[in-house]
Length: 118
Image (cartoon, rainbow, N blue to C red; front, side, top):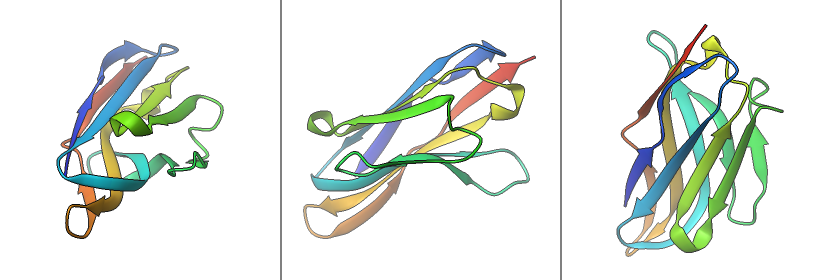
């Protein structure tokens, strides 16, 4: 299973970005999908996640500003980021777990850079 992310870039503080992540390959079913972020020298941290039935979880820093959603028919997850702050600057990684053609899987995307200027 491969995850391909898109939508990162440079934005001014207060602006918005929408990240997308599509899963491809021998996907039988996907349980949870999520977005993580990482800055140099720090551990990767959860930003938001969503289960197959739509249950969402957000980091405190994301609540009220970010919205995660998914299109199960397209095996795609989205992260709408509003009111961006310079501290949101990081590489954002998509994550998914589920069942592929033969067994369970955990997959990561290649990462997409989000830079918020002050």
